[in-house]
Amino acid sequence: MKIAISACACKQELPLVSFEKGLTMESLFHHRSKDKVVVIMGATGTGKTKLAIDVAKHFQPAEIVNSDKMQVYKGLDITTNKVTEEECAGVPHHLLGTVDPNINFSANDFCRHATSAIDSIVERDGLPIIAGGSNSYLEALVNHHAEFRLRYECCFLWVDVSLPVLHSSLQARVDRMIDAGQVNEVREFFDPSADYTRGIRRAIGVPEFDDFLRAEASGTEDEITRKRLLEAAIARIKINNCTLANRQIQKIHRLHGLWKQSMHRLDATEVFLGSRDAWHDHVLAKTLLILHKFLYG
Ligand code: ATP
Image (cartoon, rainbow, N blue to C red; front, side, top):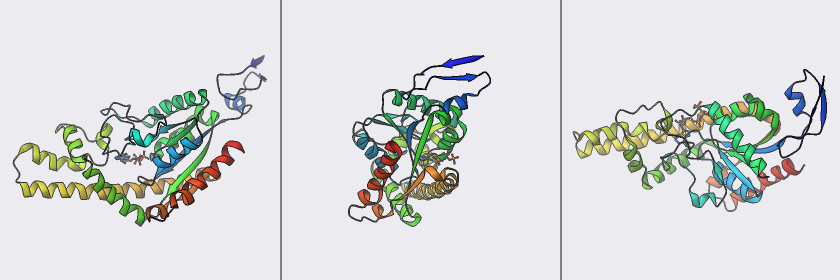
């Protein structure tokens, strides 16, 4: 039996192909060129968010799909370091602060929501940019989600920063988050019976405050003890952020082995050392060159 397949709702149309019964969807998709997706990855605090917005502004229209597994949840904007409306500069974001903070948003959930957001961006003739630090989400989408793999071609941009430099920057970022009101944000969210293994409460910066907030709520500890507990919480948050960065970098090295051909490492260390024009020279200009080649051949 011969079946004729005509154009589908995708941006780049399928050529009219006839194929024998039994041919797989995979071989069908080989007949059309894939739509392009930019993926920006890197450890926490390396500048992925800024790069995604700069890329989006350059290749308009473009929209960003968040792939940070804590920023998908509603709430705790300081603690999870969500991009502000001002920083977004009008670039539409998807999967950012939209999920109920009490549920577990799985890698499968991410794949479904991200694919549908990317489909809709492509239908609007926009460039989809996935940006975030959750490598398990990216791996699930790119390696295991057949529909995504068949329809999209990815260019992976890895923002890397030398570890000692990143560690000191992460510690300074924790101090800035505390100054920005993180303790109060977590205090308002505090529930002594809550489960720290579910939803947004797994975020670094939530469980670490538990001892301090319990002491505060019970009113049994003196001020010196409370101050000591608060300092201990902040010190733990700094250590946990550095540990997270180390783990994320290890995972990226493994993914680099899998995605080598289409993965580009951008060394942003100079940016963190304060060199003049470093963002443009070391990160943005190189990114734009890579993406021009990827998008226009
Ligand atoms: P894992 O399999 O270890 O969960 P992953 O690649 O799926 O790794 P990561 O983004 O590395 O996901 O997140 C791991 C953990 O790091 C989260 O469960 C959370 O505790 C913490 N984390 C990640 N992103 C944030 C964030 N934006 N704010 C606070 N904590 C975060």
